[in-house]
Image 1 (cartoon, rainbow, N blue to C red):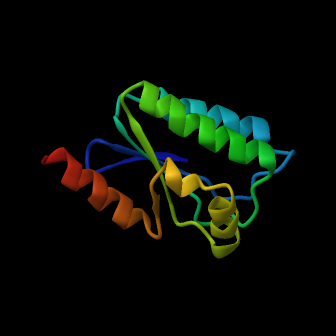
Image 2 (image 1 turned 120 degrees about the vertical axis):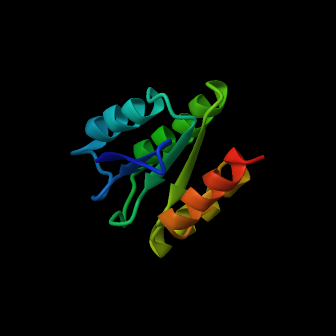
Length: 114
């Protein structure tokens, strides 16, 4: 579900595991958030405990694509099992990861005042 917070931050709340059954829907939702007018994008993974390799690829490509379009996509509410995978694939080396959506929102609010 896509929502707007603080007037200019787009948040995609993904509320299920990312598997072969829903990978195309996930890809569509990620493309949708990338086409929003906002430069500040959050992928909230609060209820996601599994992401297959295709899902990891979509997330990585979406972060890179956002940067190419002068936007920033960050991730929030990452469960421990997913965090371990993100650590192994070194996601934190090229994207920002936040424990809570509120922290990601504060990050963007602070950057709007710079």
